Amino acid sequence: MASEGLGSCYFAERPEGCFLEVFRSFTTVVPRHELETRRLCRIELPRAVQLADCTSEAARAWGITAEIHSTPSYETTQGWAHALAQAGFDGIRYLLRHDPAQRLAGVALFGPSQPQEQSPPISESLLREVRSRFGIQVVP
Image (cartoon, rainbow, N blue to C red; front, top):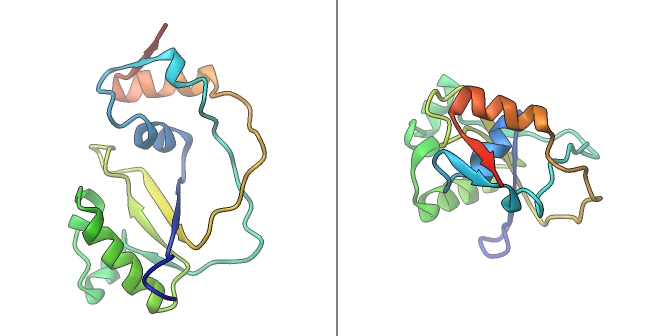
């Protein structure tokens, strides 16, 4: 895979992970109008993918440290993505940077993105979950 043109589509394994990553710039309050243009969607991949599991202790053998989960440097993470794509991986599994407990994981899949069908609005139950667990509330 060439260095130029390597794209990534980001996912979280749980809905609250998606919420935390998308609304990362809001500390405790998210204006409701910010939700109106966003949707959660579940995807089904057309084939099995091989992920570089950066949450595994075995990732240390590749020189990966916990910094990969928290660095704000896109240059660093793009370098890792390129190297792992060159090694034959279809994507990366990592811990979500905006979960302070580091319990939520995300996946970045390499390659071009495909348009998705329109999904239903973000549910009130998810809003209750992120308020309860992370102290983030949605206000009018």
